[in-house]
Image 1 (cartoon, rainbow over the protein chains, first blue to last red):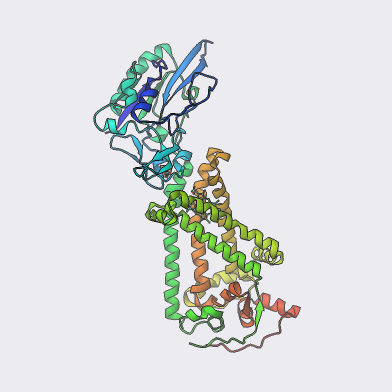
Image 2 (cartoon, rainbow over the protein chains, first blue to last red):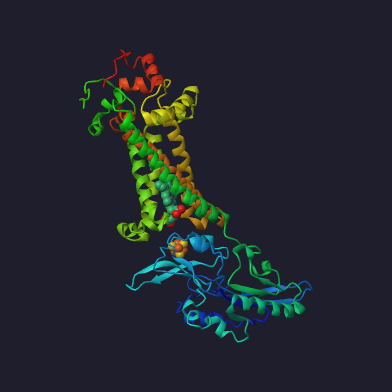
Length: 279
Length: 232
Ligand code: HEM
Ligand code: SF4
């Protein structure tokens, strides 16, 4: 069954407890930044920092000032571009709907990085069991180990205001709708973000404003190029390879059968390669 | 098996520069092919350890990519005349070229057919050159973008992948055909000598590249050959 994380940005106060909890539980390395000109720490999630609290200063329609806080991490797309393009089958969707990367299989090709519609996946140093270091794709896995043991993701547990809630996707959508009613009273543009272009996500937002305001793509989808690449070009390429091989093979056989006497000069004056002439 | 006629007179076909360019390019192509196979499908993942790990395989792919491009410049610098002849020839498409292609399937499968006199490059070779150039452009263009994704917009990078992939599939199909016709198929074997030693028997030139042969005769570079009866 699909599980989901509901992030209600309308009640988030930007305490960044989720960021700390994530770093802590997932043992992520230090990832310092110089002052960026705002309260926001990192510009976006990356391989060492799997969730980043977006802090935006926003002027609403009536000219009032608003602080927008948004917990941003992997969206766990139902139809995930990264899963599609990974040549090593290193990225998979689990039975609970979360998308996880196996760094032991990853080779660091960055195909997933280039194709993520949300710009979430990035490479970061990974140390394997033998102590070998390599750049491997990393991102939020929705605390895969925790949720498969019946616990909530670290960020959801930590959030003091229940701005991050975890449960079945169905429950979360229900809850989102309930909260949307309330949120609409304050924010007329409030909406649920569960984009259909990627068949829905397993992290869904209750947003106070249209997605663009939060730099979210209004209609994210698996890139058409990725579909052409993996659903058409790749299988066709393999087939073409098979067909050419077959044609060559057939040509070889039919020549053996019907062209016994060869073609005069050619076969005889071919220089040293003649040694392997079959006649 | 008949002994080859070693004292048969020959005529120069390709320069050293042309031959070296061809083989360096061919070698690099295969090296690129092999080093990228595990990224093409995980069926070939056992190749990673052979190259010393995925990082090494990807580094080698880039090194061979450079080697893949160099021959073109070698050719232009050291045998511009040969390059020009090639470029001009493969772009020239006349009735005889299409007739050649029409007759080709019969020739390919049965080994016998009547075809009109051909240029320095026959229509098949022209087609092979054009397809190869097309695939090469696709592969180099997209490969460059994939090498330096940071320098391009994400839409461009995303489209580079399918283009590289399609270029790869097409190129391989073309190359398989090309190799078979040059070493596997009994009717084309003499042409291999042109790409190894640089010269071909005059009788071969006459039979397979009639237009070129006539030109050479007209220019007085070779003597008109008496029509010999078929050898075998
Ligand atoms: C000449 C310039 C070329 C350049 C600059 C280039 C570069 C690249 C790059 C950067 C990648 C991405 C993987 C990585 O990071 O290593 C790649 C993948 C690949 N290359 Fe090339 N390459 C070139 C030519 C070729 C040729 C001639 C072939 C085929 C014989 C080839 C076959 C492949 C394949 C099959 C992949 C995997 C892509 C996929 O899964 O769709 N490349 N290449
Ligand atoms: S970087 Fe790793 S996880 Fe991402 S597509 Fe490449 S092999 Fe797969």
